[in-house]
Length: 301
Image (cartoon, rainbow, N blue to C red):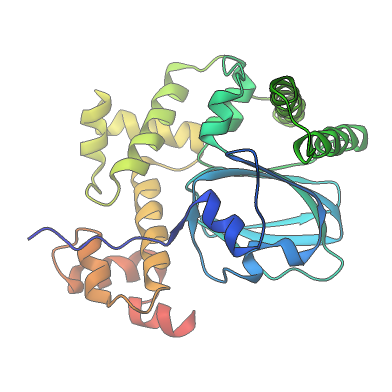
């Protein structure tokens, strides 16, 4: 019997705007010029969830804290945090002194903006499955803030023509190119061109995100990528620092934790959703990799 589909809660771009009491006239784009914790979705959505949009957050004052795919990302004044679509995000209630600005946009808006994704660093930044916490120079941070300010002014203008939409698109592109330049400087040690090993590793990560529920063997991914399991593990470890099998296990455990956080699902349902043969094997697998049993994890959460 096919497992009952249960997933981490998914909130669309429109859902999140509705929850925080905001609206936008430009489909797929929202800008927070400057705000405190009252605009933080975590103050309304107090559980891990996925959404279909990018976020580029500029920490203006104080400090903030987010968890992206269950990894901690504390930020302080002058830092930039990127969050890719479909990442599991968990926003903490932030302290009163926390002030931030943010560019929020969907893949659809990115596509229609006309941005040239052939730029290697921009492709790397926007195609990533991971978040990046960047440390721009003060003048770089100020340029990003100023671009966001001008974009917000144009975006919120009550008088908008087709030419104004082109201005919005070009300002949006300018912001992302500036962000790409910061990313390039912060990651200048990286190669400009992808090597075969980097390409295989990127394709593996993409395939893993699509198939980890049903497939937990390195053999499956190696066959799909037309390499041997040993070569895949060695290559992925060389590029990411972790072998393929460990990344598979991390992805499964990350999803399991998110599902276990929703107490409306039984442990048996979680096991079934992740295609384990039964609850016993799931609990054994979870304890081996998480250090506690699923029931203990729920008690501790």
